Amino acid sequence: MDIEKVDQIIDKHNSEASSLIQVLLEIQSENRWLPRQILERISEKLEVPLSRIQHIATFYKAFSLIPKGRHEVHICMGTACHVRGAQNVLTAVEDYTGIKPGETDLDLKFSLETVNCLGCCALGPVMEVDGQIHGKISPAETADALKKYE
Image 1: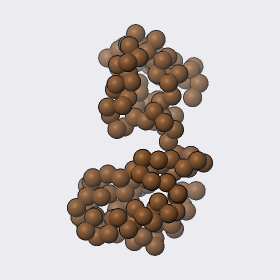
Image 2 (image 1 turned 90 degrees about the horizontal axis):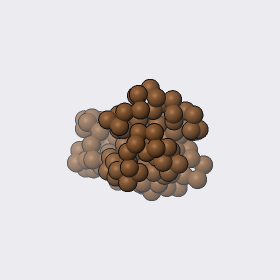
Image 3 (image 1 turned 90 degrees about the vertical axis):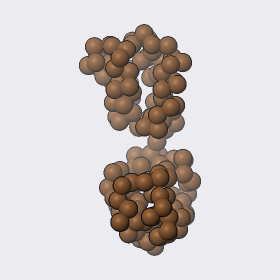
């Protein structure tokens, strides 16, 4: 993401420090992560110390300081999904993508995370990809589901 685009997002919020989280969210949404040079620019334009911005960016799970894949895969590990085989689904996704939770593949295609609940317990085990729910998924079905996102 270029600095000009960052400036447009900041200007849209009238360069107000109170809009910091919204600015970070918009940049994260477009860029999939928050590089240091972008955080420095936000600090400069909003007149907010870089240390405060980094504290916020590391506190909230919505933000990432490392590159994320084009497709975010979440595996529910909540009780309902766990008892229905979520660990086996997670293992199948790890095998297919070659990454563990918290990682992104080298092609920046997939990022993998585990979550405690996706709010659709009756569909467990659940895999979510880019907000799309894949319910009652078996380990054998994960590869076919992920191929749709390549």
